[in-house]
Length: 397
Ligand SMILES: Cc1cc2nc3c(=O)[nH]c(=O)nc-3n(C[C@H](O)[C@H](O)[C@H](O)COP(=O)(O)O)c2cc1C
Image (cartoon, rainbow, N blue to C red):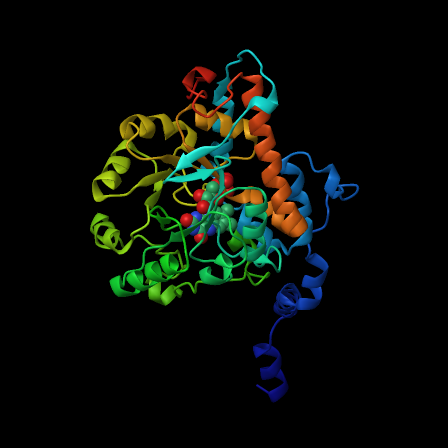
């Protein structure tokens, strides 16, 4: 075979060359600049700030503002996203039972929790990495939460260190902790958060081996921002990099860390009466009924469906909070009527911050709070104590 013939037979085919070019273009920053930020799609114009009337109005503006990977990181749920959808669907299975309407001015949404007076039972759930949403990140979120008189739970995976966030405003600030195998490291993290002034510690116990397929579809073209390094496929011992998540811990870990916390300590990720009772036995002072906003195990129940079971088992011994799927004040009313003491919002304040920065996050919280007040007024329930199960009719499948 001549040199020329050999080159020809070993060289890449036209098809391979085109595939190579397509791969290069797909990964190229030049093309990415045309894909991101996400186009405004079906919207003829971006609504103005004053036109924002429901939490949902903020979502498309946030989506238009940020790269697709940042949007998807907030939006996604695990696997087929069944639980993500079910969290929303569950609200359709709970009717509000009318009462004798009262004046909205007579409604008082304040409550006492862990010896502290809170103006509203609507809190901010811990959500990681807020800086990609807006340069102010958690500093801005805390400012907005304080302005809206909502307590904020700061994620362990925040973009700014907890002590810096704690200095950004002065409202109620809680710290969320992800278990760490090293007990000494756990002790240090918990001590630092308490020294920086967190008023409670929320231990998340539900994040498990979850796969987010939206990230796979993006093929990481957006270069998703990270604060926690993920283990490599080799470290995980499987070729597809399916996350081992945080499944390593068991109840004894929670027993070990309980004495490390002197402020009230809550367990987040409760979905059964059994889990709730076990946590109370270990010494937790409160529970958060949560499926991580549909981001833990897919095909689990919605939190609204299991709330009454947990509330009944707990029987008032500790406060029961709930999150996952809450978008409107009407949603909040349903959970409070079923026995929750407070409701946490995860994605909603992220939409606000990502759409309009601090004023957006503040406004979106105020909108949901106002909807809560209006609904309580229509149902004739002037206080949270008056909002009991007679305010709802449930028809879960
Ligand atoms: C983008 C994003 C990041 C999250 N990060 C955390 C986290 O760091 N720690 C945690 O305990 N929960 C985290 N969660 C779960 C939330 O605390 C909360 O359970 C969930 O968002 C509630 O559902 P919702 O978004 O429908 O309101 C995260 C949720 C989202 C959407």
